Amino acid sequence: MLIKGYDVGPVVPGESLLVRPGFWSNYLLAMCSDGGCAERPVPEWFGDDDADADAMSEVLFDPERWPGFRVPAEDAPGAVVIYRNLEGDYGIDYLLTRPGRSRVQQIAGWDGDFSGTGLTWRELIRIADSPFPTVEGVQETTARLLLLLPLLADPDVPETASARLTAALVAVGAPQDTASHTAQHLLAHLMRRSRHDPTWASPLSGS
Image (cartoon, rainbow, N blue to C red; front, side, top):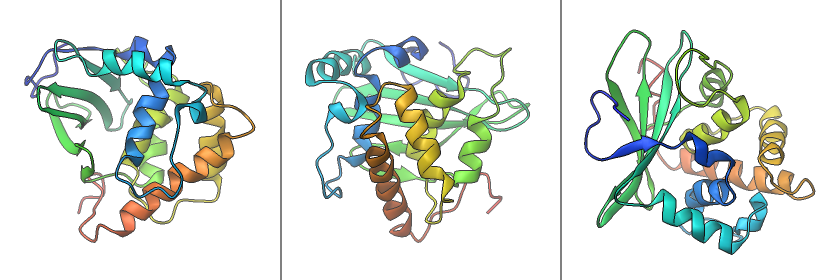
């Protein structure tokens, strides 16, 4: 998979992995690996078990194949999420794409901790709700929202955010009776992170 301006490794389309057991627990639990969570998150929060998570980890962190997840948006910036599986330097890169431009801009990364800039809830939802059916990538709005969620850096999300995130988690297999707790946990972590970064500015804000 060729991404102009990003040629550091063997990136392959990863969209087919989104529906496989273990994906969402791998992807979203990584946000809480910094030790800031009062409660230890487990794969069961996302409807997975340890075996699911372990098997998916082997796929996601394969040095020979770096899964990339394209989130194209029509008439708005889109995003690409890439597992950067360099030996000894594993991480996740978050790239921004812009209409009319062929190159990408890396705006954030995850290397055991989040670095870079993020999006407000409004910006995140705008991208999630603007699929681009004629361009390859993730079109389903639930998966788009969850892929973009680690970029959330907004200390004041609306009251509706928890309900929307809960519905998204249930849609990808999280248990209905615990999905609200999981959503609140994830939002609290992300909002806490944004408050601790006084230099934060959205890459879409013009700042």
